[in-house]
Amino acid sequence: MTDLSNPNIEGVYEMNVPLDFRLLITLSSICSLRKEQQHTNILSNLYQFDELEFLSLSEQTYLQSGTLQCIYLYIHQDNGKLFIALFIPNNSRVFIGILDSIRENHMPNLNKLLKNECEKRLQKGIDTNLLPINEHQFEVKVDTDIQNIWKRFNKIIASLRENDMETRTLSIYLAIQSNISICDLQSSMLSSLNDYPKVTLSIKDKTNLYKGLDWQRTAARHALQHYANANIILVNMLEQCRYLHIPLGNFPDDPCLFACDLFYARHLIKHNH
Image (cartoon, rainbow, N blue to C red):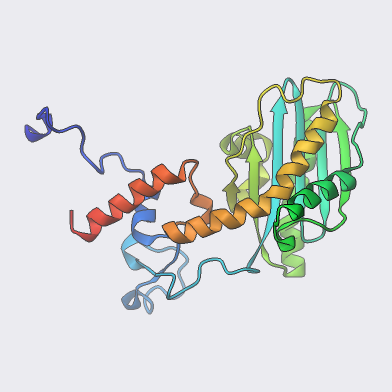
């Protein structure tokens, strides 16, 4: 302990390192059961940390295209108003909930808006496969009680898993962009989120976005812009995750700083520090 009080020592690396970061350092994005454990734990779904070992991307590709289906959830709360949209690309359905002081739907032509957003990106050379170019079926409901909105979306999100099990379609993960923290959403507002793996899109809309009288139109335009960008962003995130050897759900808000910590920690372990 005397050495630690030396003024030349600014800190001790590895103190207070979160457990999930330790897992990312050692097991990365792909791991398997060690050979010596395969016979003893063949029927188990729970494993000890030292029973697992790292697999490189040369041994196993991480998240090949077409192995999962992404559902995009957009939530923005501002000035006592709320706009929530759940986009399901596989069947081109969109559920929208709006909290307003009166039950009036001022939505513009949403398919036209989405088409315009996709055309802008096509003109910039974005791959068609990354854009939601199909015509979508929008189901919009305006409410004056926020609890009714949460109840509705809890039912919709919960039903996704039931439909998935019945039709045996691809497993689902949710890409979430929200200015309400996911912890708060899961604990009190949208408890059905607990049933799904989640990827956080760290993109924030500006504050006071819903100040104008035509705020519903503004909200719709921003939501569709983000939806048009979502797949582009997710593909980019996945490439970075493969480079960093981390799961997509653990993608950090600051990937550059996180990468420095991660690679430095792995370097120390590799050299027995």
